[in-house]
Length: 293
Image (cartoon, rainbow, N blue to C red; front, top):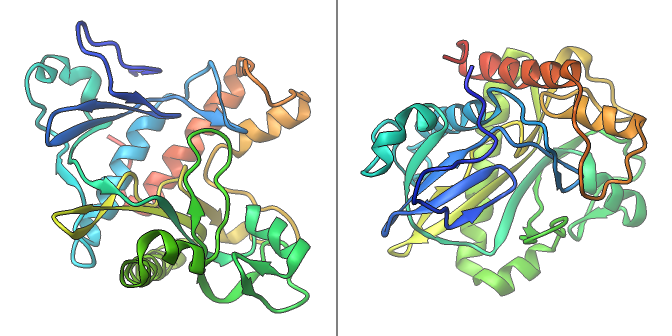
């Protein structure tokens, strides 16, 4: 089992290191490598989660392929890597994509079918999420009457901030804002309908898009446990937080140890690492319909 916390290729420096991904500039394309890093409360932890990067990449490829009829995506190849990266195929295999370089839109395209996370906090305070008035009396994790598009800013560090559709329109222009809203809602509805008979609730998800030759392109990751809240339907019980297919075991552990949520992050014990790894792999198995290779 190969674990990759960060890429180290002799003489090759990444153009950027995100919370999870290392990105290499190939000219008109990018090489995106999903590492096994894990962040919690916006702090990258020192302990990697085996298989996490492969789950994120393989699940993204699954969704990108499934709905390429809805919108084109940025993937060029996930098996062939240009020189000199072809020399590092063992490190790249299963966790990497060569993608087209686009002009990313300056917003996160979030769709919510349930009241949770930052949306729940906003609703408790104002009765709204991103300016959208919702019915009174909703409980945490309640299903909404219909999914809503709730964009957010992209924060280089810290938390993204929820914004209104009107503000998103001021950033994108009316035509493009309406297009990304429509595409985001369609992708969410398709994914939720796909997941439901498999015993999974898609509560919230985040999409990112870019422009290439004035064409809207689906970029970044697609419907992964890092970009979505997937809940096991058998355990769904509105009125509080839900069990989920993500890093919940890590968050719960950190809350119990009363870590102040500031760097440096603590090392994770083996049982927390293994439980988290199992959740990521389980999400892949259920949604993709096969075990992670």
